[in-house]
Length: 253
Image (cartoon, rainbow, N blue to C red; front, side, top):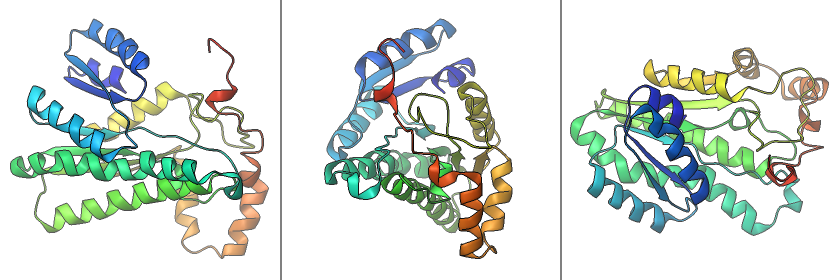
């Protein structure tokens, strides 16, 4: 996503807990001749988020587009998840959105201009076995963005846009080992293109792939038992059986 926004001549400010990864991305995007600054930030910490936000505003001024993209996944059945990992999942995948928006929205409101983007998940629309904490965090992100969209509209702040993105599994390593019986794992580059296009068009709600729009719509009038039968047929609740995640990757991948 940093690469795509750099190609659009955006000035970038990147946050991540992985300092080495940040430095690598900065080198990659600077070939486009854009300004790119990076800050190592633990997004599970409200205090560190607020402190980093003050540094960004002091050094770079206001933020036009805020993209909440950080995410972690435990990938275990609920009772096998440690309390600390459940808390960490909620802190990174949901609570961090509260704190970043609180930090940067006031400046957007003064100008009645800006865009808030949340990279949620299709797991924020449908519950999946083996992803209880992850689904809860992504449901929270989707609900937060829907509420913010309504709140901004109620205040007449029509110049501030929101986009919530709900993609299927993406082939980034985060969900290595998952099984997908019928639906292909998403290509990262194609997914990013769809996301950036949605931001440029001020699209409020994006589901990837498009076929999931139909499933999401059907859920509204489908009996719960029928939905469970369909999920079993599609292999949804078996998808996490072989999950390994990034820790399962070979060294050097």
